[in-house]
Structures are given as structure tokens and as C-alpha cells.
Length: 287
Image 1 (cartoon, rainbow, N blue to C red):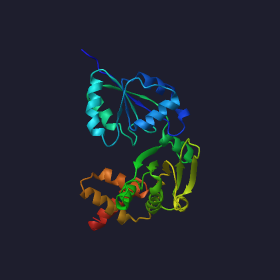
Image 2: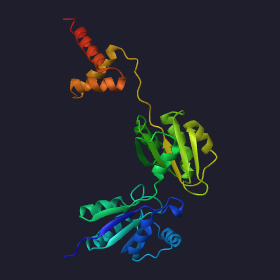
Image 3: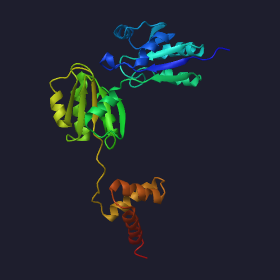
Image 4: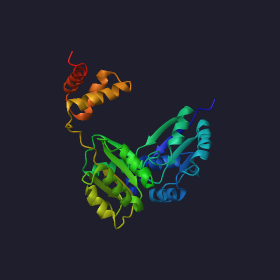
């Protein structure tokens, strides 16, 4: 019985080829199949690393990902060692790979990785913003309405946000961020990371939007400060009780409703509880 092969996800340099992990050259030489997002870029990378690809090279990009995945899974099931590389960074992170990993896992194929450079982590580290908690949001939608909707979903997100963006859409993206998050929200635009013209611009979104108006070139990663913790709202007891009642009518238990309203308003749970009791007493005429 033939044992299954191994799928290797290999991180590639995001700019400087000297950042290539040492294992990458060995994996390129040993793989039975190398699936590359762009075979021409792969050729340039192997030349820079002075390595000869030992196996078959196939293209694996957004346009053929669905059709090529079954072919690669069959090769893996037959015992092949398949190496997946994208143009830059880690496969599956806003790049092809997710489908192949999922299909390989489903077939019981071993999946491992050659860790490498990451634009997400590099930008976070350089941003000067909190990095203890963050979330990666990938690319924003191209259409304005869809872009605003996506940003509004993250409007109250307290973790630091990371986005990829195309240079020709950067100004529109920053404009939308300033509109949704507020012009004063801190952010950093990281351009051409690890390359010759690397640049990191830090400042409030309004300032970055003005800077990007004249056009920006290169690979872009945007890091945005998370929302500030909610402060106490100036709500009277009647409004607190009303919010609890709305949640109860929706099927939430009173205890959970009180806790949720207290958290949202930034007040102690006891204050909300007392407001609910007072509202019920008022509604029953104090009896």
C-alpha cells in the first residue's frame, strides 16, 4: 500500500531574496511537484537562490486553483511531496492555498510548512501600534458601498487591524477608513517592505489620506489602530431598563441582558439591575 505524500507550504521573500529561509532551497530541490502562483517568478527566485528544481513545476493561481487542486491531491495521495509557493509571503494568506490545504487534510495527507517572511507581521512590528492582539482583514472590496460595509463591520473592533491594498486604490481605502473609523484614528501605511524603497508612514488617517492623494506605488500593507474601549454613556435609568427589555423580548435571559447592556453602556451591572427594578416598580404603580 502506497503511503500518502506531504504537502509543504513554503514562505517566500516579500522583497529581499536574502530573506529566503534556508530550508526553501532544499525543499525546492527535493519536491516531486512544485506548484507556483507564477512560474516566471519562481524561476527568478530559484536563480537568485542558485537552486535547481528537482521535480515537475505546475502553475497554481486564482484562475486555475479549483481545477488544479484535485490533480495535486491525487499526486499527494499517491505519495508525492508537493511544494506550494506563492509570489511573496505565506501561501493561503490572501494567496492561493486554502483549497489545497483543506482538500489535503480531508484526504488525510500530512501538511507542513517552511516558515518565511510575512508582510502582515512585518507591518505590525513596524507600525508602532499595539500588536498584542490583532486581526488580519485581507483586501477590502473594490466597490465603495461594499468597502464601507466591510469597514463598518470592524468599526468597534478593539484589536489592531491589518489590511492589504493595491496602490491605485490606497487613497480610496484610506478615505473610507477615515469616514468609518474617524479621521483621528492612528494608522500606518507600510510600502515596499524589505525592498530598496521601503517606507512606513505613520499618523492619523486624515493625514495619511492627504499624503496618498497624489498616488503611491508598490506593495501596500495598512495597519490601523483598534477602537478605543467604550466609555460610560450618559444614559438614564429608563433608557437602561428599555435596552434590557428589548433584549428580553428578543429571547435573551434577564441576567445576560443586564450584563450585555452594562458592558455596552460602560456602567456597573448593579446600576442596570437597579434601573430594571425601578422601571418595574414604576410600571406597577409602586406596589
